[in-house]
Amino acid sequence: MPRLSFAVGATTLEIDRGDITYEATDAIVNAANTGLRGGGGVDGAIHRAGGPTIMASCRKIGRCPTGQAVITTAGKLKTRWVIHAVGPIYAGLRNDALELASAYRSSLERAIEVGARSVAFPSISTGAYGYPIRDAIQVAINAVSEFVKTHPEALDLVRFVLFSDADYSVYFAEFTCRGAERD
Ligand code: APR
Image 1 (cartoon, helix red, strand yellow):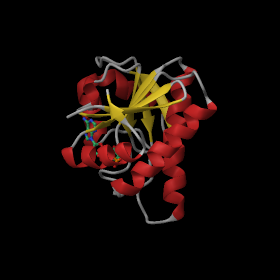
Image 2 (cartoon, rainbow, N blue to C red; image 1 turned 90 degrees about the vertical axis):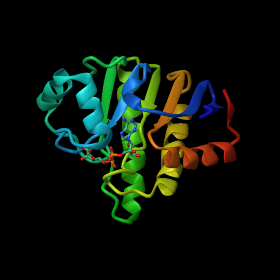
Image 3 (cartoon, rainbow, N blue to C red; image 1 turned 90 degrees about the horizontal axis):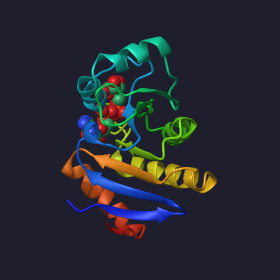
Image 4 (cartoon, protein in one colour; image 1 turned 180 degrees about the vertical axis):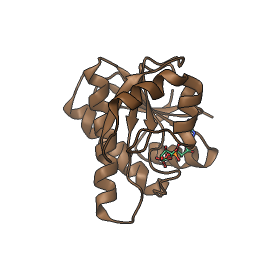
């Protein structure tokens, strides 16, 4: 699958098809729940691959409200940091988009607080939490683009890592519409 990217100021926004637990960006984002207690999907994969120190850090933090994100170290993963973001459980209400945008923004705030310059995101809320991916993409790309515009020079790379061919295709089409090119 080809990687596609476009620039927003000094930051590259990129898509890639794959498993986020293999990412070597400075930080990766987890699609967590408010109790930070682990689960299935990408959350389960990150805790399995990273080992128990990530859960130990999550227990110390306790909880994270919907639309917010907290950061821990990354155990055995290649990345240095795991940012645990809590997206909304899709309800079909206007608030869903506000909370999803906030989860992306808050993740990037945590990243720059620790000096991370590259961040990989999964598609937050579009698995168990039921957010339609076509709507979620608009929210995700707009939130990230606005953040990097208001924090110029803070981040080199934001990568969206899509686990399934179907999700990748939807992102591919949207990135193409926004003028992205092959790396
Ligand atoms: N790498 C990248 N993406 C992945 C991976 C992976 N290893 N595994 C799954 N995904 C993708 C899914 O295909 C989906 O598109 O992550 C996206 C988000 O799906 P979920 O993991 O179900 O996350 P979400 O919808 O935000 O639901 C969060 O699920 O696992 C629980 O504890 C988690 O309660 C929380 C809820």
